[in-house]
Image 1: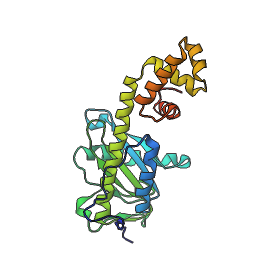
Image 2: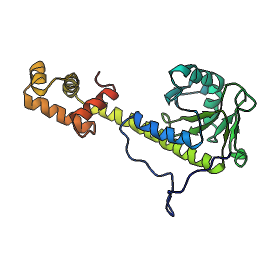
Image 3: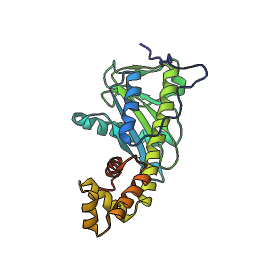
Image 4: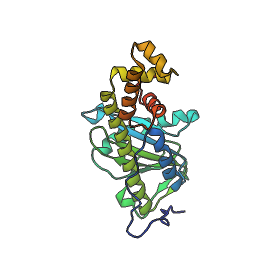
Length: 248
């Protein structure tokens, strides 16, 4: 069975690879990755980013998102042990997708009409077949979107589409990091303190008493923190502050 992209919803002149709306956290990326996974009947996905600088042997791939599952945490480790070095070396030289076959003879990843525009990794090192889409966006935006399955037979159209979506995923992940950094620089100690106490369930009057401030000042700090965190209300601001690691 060849996997063909579903374009029934496209209008004339419209591309599937449009810029997506702004996301608020990494959890918003999961539905997009699951959609890509389902498009090719893959079993799992993983997002790896390249950390470190300098020569390839000083760099490493870190898993940012995956759905290996807690029972299969060893899968991700075995994948990096098998192909980590090859992936790091490849991304410095090429942006061609990588494909590999699993240990079993029927565990294969194929693309007959696009083979010249993909590269093969050494087969039979892991239990599953798969494809890895390299993305290169700069010093902190390089990595791979990986999909694994028992069997894959992909058309050229579907590979091009998934590669484009992989770039979007990595751009959104990078954007989240940049916004987190900007928010961290923007929030003052008082704003963080007020958010922490609000997150603990304290009302403004209790926060004011705890910090020795007026209720008006507390509300001003919470309001400015809400704006800086691009939130619609105090509850969302607290949720984002927790997700970004500013408060516990």
